[in-house]
Amino acid sequence: MADRRLQVFHTVARLLSFTKAAETLHMTQPAVTFQIRQLEEFFNTRLFDRTHNRISLTAAGGQVFEYADKIISLYSEMENSVREMTGDVSGILIIGASTTIAEYMLPGLLGEFKTLYPGINIRLKISNSLGIVHMVEDNSIDVGIVESPISNKNLTVEVCWYDKLVFISLPQHPLAKKATVSVQDILGLPFVCREEGSGTREFICEYLKKNNLQLDDLNLNLEVGNPEAVKSAVEAGLGVSIVSEATVVKELKLGTLAARPLNPPLERPFSIVFQRQKFRLRAMEEFMDFAHAHCEKRVSQ
Image (cartoon, rainbow, N blue to C red):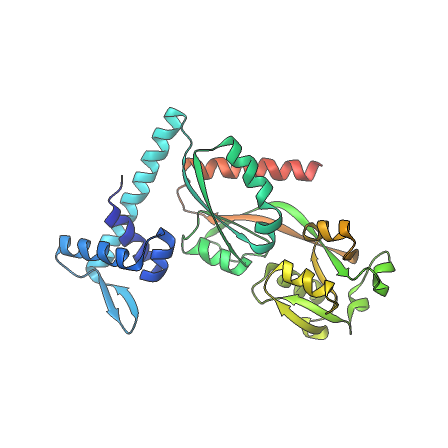
């Protein structure tokens, strides 16, 4: 119902990128450019300066952005108010999740949520924790679920549940016979690690620091971009690793990997993160309530 040209302009102005705006809005870049051109013709002035493949708001563009921000926020508030009155829960909810959470924790949660609220269309974006936090910061997503610490004070962070990390190796590895594994046991062994920006990598670094070590003290044999690649590398005999216990359930049943608790134990919080000042649509409110209830159920089990 809000003017489509205004929505497109607001997204481009927020991201300062026609390409990113097109991806966010699920439009082609020429379609985004056309909508902006129409709005510029309506106001009879340029709204963006375009120089050296970069764009910035003109003075007029800045003024339009201020009003567009208020208009879109009021529209969302109005829509939410009417839906609460009528009991209708629908709309689009854009969720971002770090790789581990998206692949191993979210499918079951989203399946249950969709059964309760079939009218809500969910779009899921997957990245590492750092990427998801950036998406929350630039409003590309409504809510993110990550496993790394967050320092931005403009974001609200609500811990949902705790995840245990474990040492993994081939079943025949000598350390697989120990009751627990310490970082001292791992020193010198070929180690398979996640990429920079990964929440898992951040927590391993913090864990090493508490044990007076650094990541460079490990024998880093391979860096990969997702949990499946870590497990495949360990199964192929390329090294040992530390991963979320939730990611190796299938491999432990099949006997292709062995997992042992770390000593001292390593746990990390999985947190829901969103813009502190963001107006929360009904769909987002329902998801947040559902996610917290789901987390409480996991903790009590």
